[in-house]
Image 1 (cartoon, rainbow, N blue to C red):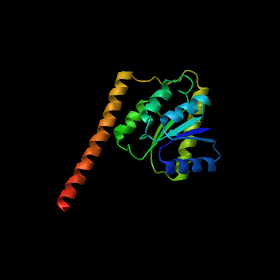
Image 2 (cartoon, rainbow, N blue to C red):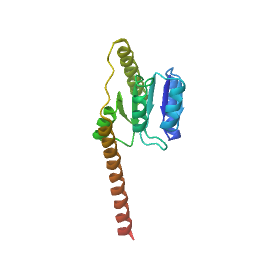
Image 3 (tube, one colour):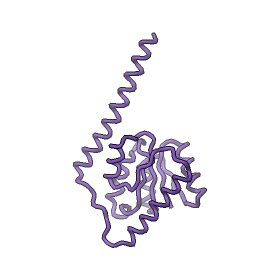
Length: 170
């Protein structure tokens, strides 16, 4: 059973179709809050989530997921097209995610990653005392703010360039 979260209906549908086509039961969610609520009702074997979503983004979802005593052992995969900077990946992994995957992926490769993560999770579950300690909460929040600020700066620069191009065209 896999929870998937993405606010883009096309991305959600495509991911669901790929996973169901490979025999997985899928629980779709439109944002992190929906995904977390669904997982708390019936804990899944894996979560795959986008990062940039309304209500609760993927980073906050991962923080909440890894703090939950029931869900913290469930593997977490980020699947994003927006946060592609190596610092974003570092931050995602520091939150406890098992993988950071850039969209789009060839379905065969995505399924290979899913199987690897599930296999690794099974091996961890069978090995005693292998829980990964989470980082200092204040440091995590500082890094989270840094990632969001970097994304905002990039967007502002894009908008400023667009305004300059429009002015030049006028």
